[in-house]
Length: 247
Image (cartoon, rainbow, N blue to C red; front, side, top):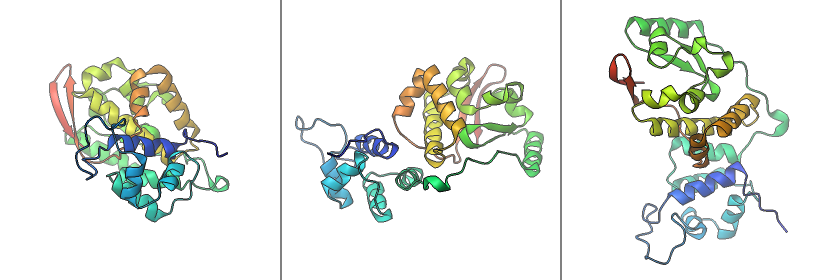
């Protein structure tokens, strides 16, 4: 009998995405009240929308098959209304790099031109910092240090945006919408975990956050992914008041 590997990242991501999409959002019309036990799509509904058999999709969601073609993955992504970052994440989980070709990520370094850009932004009164893998804070100008925290004063292992968001009490007062920032932070880490499954430092970070933060465990369990893009954040700074910073 086949084992049910429902704990695989691919299986967990598919289940989470399916549970978040209602029949109405998927174009199946309004559900009949009293006849559904699930809040999202049923497996058979998603399979039909994606044009695959229920048995085949069930094997994917239970981690018993990883042989999905790019076309099938795209069909599932379309049926699930995934955005570009989520679609990429689905492909990454379904097509991991062969074990013999996996390499640990290279050390992260900041290019001299990036340091010059930070100085230029400082002169223009613009706080800025550079994030690497795992949301490590690789560099920032003085304004960013005054706005958020001086990461350079912290031990190297603690210079991380996710650690600040979830473990520093100051973060809850600083961010105007801390729950949204926390959800996005966990979703960005989730994306990094899919792209760098063999990064021991990333695994250790996720483990530490899971142990120390109940909120992180909750957002991590949502299985959402997010890509860093442009946007804005609201801050409640104790000295200068309310600020909105675009990025």
